[in-house]
Image 1: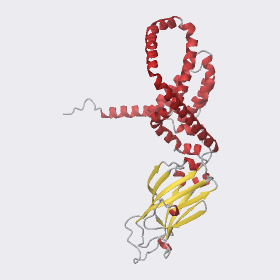
Image 2 (image 1 turned 60 degrees about the vertical axis):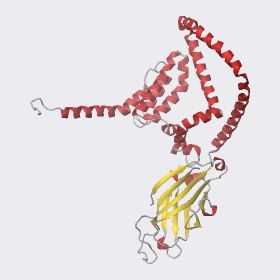
Image 3 (image 1 turned 90 degrees about the vertical axis):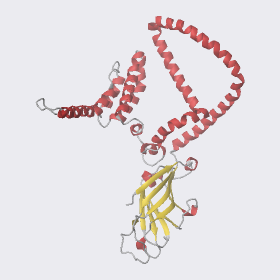
Image 4 (image 1 turned 30 degrees about the vertical axis):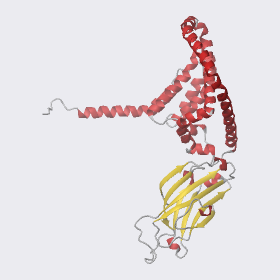
Length: 397
């Protein structure tokens, strides 16, 4: 089989056209063909996939922008096309022994993204003695450069979500433009109101702090409730700000790499497009959680701290464990299912049972996964240090 010597992927604005595609489509354009064994030009290029065959005539300088030079394979389902392999054959009219083939798997392609492939061409059928009058000396391996795109529509529920997102962002942009027209006219008034409010806050902070310190045992549940409400309002404010054009322009470049990592991964592709069964939550979270020792240590400590924070609100905090227990168990399964498969039961039980949140389930999983490695490092370093020590009766000059 042929190997891909280089692959590059570029974004394409095909989300609009992918919504109207029924089934799957494979678009292949020949960019260049190098080091062919014959001086004669090939007669045609044939593409075969999923039992479908199409061909096009070749020229010395293929034009990928010409639709007539683009090979297209259409199937009823995107999954059948995604799971298949495509065979590209360079055909000669006079001597079929000069034909060359290249094969690539479409499961390696990102749906609706344009990829450039450089494939090695192999003889088909097996190579036979060539005519020296019509062939060249094969000093290098013949290659073909392709521009490939696997097209398909999003899942039905995601198409509805995309339409909702477009409507939401359009609404937020309209509100933002309206607010921007009103706010600048009241800039002076805002400054006049802001300065007295700041002075009053600075003067009243010690008084309010002293009252809260004296009434802390009584007001602590109320303060915790107010803090929770404030946190929810802050999250809502952040989401609304991220929905505005200014927020998207400012923060989208920061989170775009993480989004691409999730969406372009195998679980992300299965979530977006009907290329197979939907991924489980665990397989999708596995692409997000860190896979190194220190990253998982930080995440495990944060998980245990959040789990223990329910003690801040007696009885009320235990009720919140009904929401947090599945989330914590999902994260622990994504990180430590391979090393400690029974840890998920301990995690779910200690979150659901009363007064057991003190058990650090995530940190236990981290110690079980990386503890032997750390012990091995310490033992190897101590043994190497011991080997370097010389007996006392041996002196070096």
